[in-house]
Amino acid sequence: MQEDTLNLLADCSAGIKMALSTIDGILPGVQDHTLRQKLKDSVSTHHRIQDETLSMLQALGGSDKEPSAMAKSMSWLKTNTKMALGDDTTAAYLVADGCDMGVKSLCRSRNRYPAAQKEAKSIAEQLIDCEEKLSASMRPFL
Image (cartoon, rainbow, N blue to C red; front, side, top):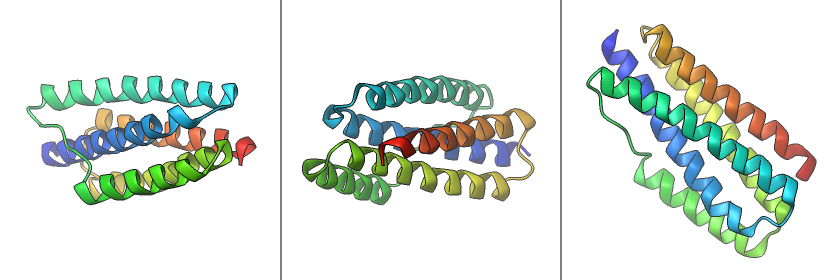
């Protein structure tokens, strides 16, 4: 049970870091005020969930997890290449695409660690919900 909990929380933490990194890479190129505000609001939500995740990880004696180097590199390359040539539509597409990948990854982790504590599952659900809402909020900008 504790191992499933720690693994689920670590996966949530890595996912949050990936999301924040992507949004941070996109924000400087966003021109539309409404799109910019939606992204900033999402950053705040991600930070709140990250604080909760890290607090629980520390309480259980676990450690934080970084996204894989390959995933970070590929995301950075895709984001920077497309944003150099793109606009707000490109930014919204990248965010929606990243959210959709994040939801799939989080659902896989949630299912992989069924014995995780209820609180850890709740954090994963909050993060999934956050990603789904952010993806949906990008649709008007596509």
